[in-house]
Length: 139
Image 1 (cartoon, rainbow, N blue to C red):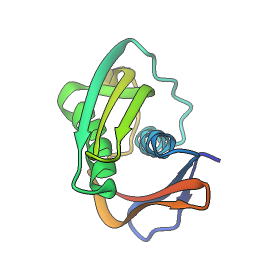
Image 2: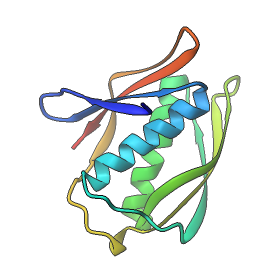
Image 3: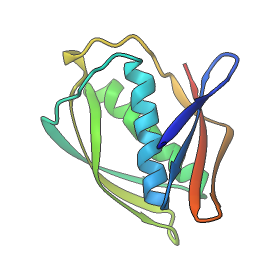
Image 4: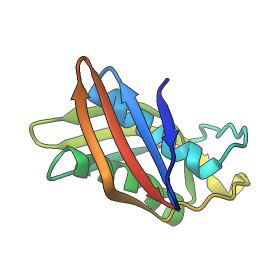
């Protein structure tokens, strides 16, 4: 399982999993995408590519900035992510670079409105040989 949704009183809470830090970031972005499009079986066409760069003061801030970038692209550029084609994280500098594909959000009907990524309950940690991240989305 790449991610799972958890009980939360008012917002959306998920945990994402991965064998690497990059994989847990990708799966976190896919959980955000699923939250945005809802339970609908929407297949977002890969009609456009974008480059994304993020920076953080710690690993949680890096994940926050990375996910916040997708909300910015959705609101400011009408861009809805389809998938992450490349992702490189520099753990020393706490930076990342990604190439993502997607299409015009206005081409799709979805009803969930994710207002913000929050730091509430957020963590990114390595447990044994796996990575896990937890995020709460303000909806």
